[in-house]
Image 1: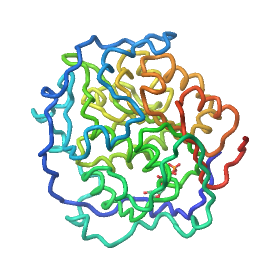
Image 2: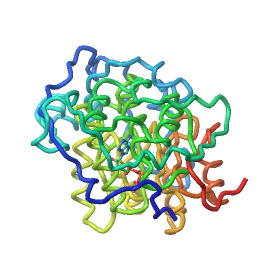
Image 3: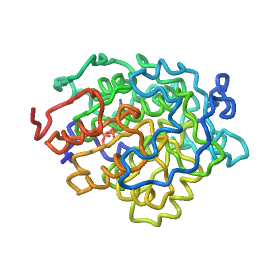
Image 4: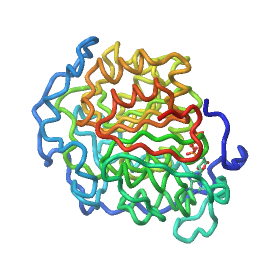
Length: 370
Ligand SMILES: Nc1ncnc2c1ncn2[C@@H]1O[C@H](COP(=O)(O)OP(=O)(O)OP(=O)(O)O)[C@@H](O)[C@H]1O
């Protein structure tokens, strides 16, 4: 279980503070969806249970896949994307949802993130000083000491400043360069260690920079580029809240779907457009079975607190989502598995879901085996 935090985290300090009336990034390098490389139109792929990797192929023909690293895929300079297919991203009649985006940082903050000197003190960095770090795998990218060492893109860097993250936590220092290089990752880290940013930053940056990403045209459907699976509604909402801050004014849209509430409202929200879908396994299965979501455009898959999901009995749902619907196979998507412990079931999941992955352990790993 991953309930004990090893950095001093005060719940009262977790609330976002400040707000920013900053001016929007320029659109100089924006390439409108209709001018990008086109993929053949395809019908909305109804999920085909039991058909392993069934829907993969068509719309992925132009995808460079993993291993190339984000920097190699169109460089920086991303300035927003629209919804390529089905015209779902046109609430205000245009392509850019940033015009109507609610500021997730609140309204009473500083106009310029750069002038903020305050640091986010939720994480006690002193607790990290002697923390053991272990990595294994082929060609492990070296850790970084600052966020600026990685080309995450201007809009995301501004949001990191707005969050008042001055330096990366150990899991971020190690995981972000690995993921930014396009590698699959099995990471063992405790809750409260900054995992959310560790997987969100590379996902958001990767979606921003990947000019090959385009949804099937002329088809109504919900085609997220990234799926983040989390065990509980609370955690899913927490990830959603954080991811919305990280993706503010980037053009990347994050939507959350969880069980225990009526599905129709979530379907309506999804149909307004989604790039990153944060979901609990049961609700995502439901949406897939209803044919309301297709996973065929998924480039990034993150499983957070994987050990907890297995403890809660979600393994069949997770395997169905990842292996039996229309999600691209390992190697054609980038997969990141986060878990506080590394028992045999997680090791099996890692070998089934990940491709040539890097193993990262931050801190003491409970139930660790060789
Ligand atoms: N580099 C950083 N600098 C300062 N604060 C940070 C940094 N990274 C994350 N935080 C803050 O630390 C807290 C814990 O981070 P986060 O929620 O990402 O941890 P987590 O490991 O994902 O935990 P959980 O498993 O509960 O989701 C959050 O309030 C987050 O905003």
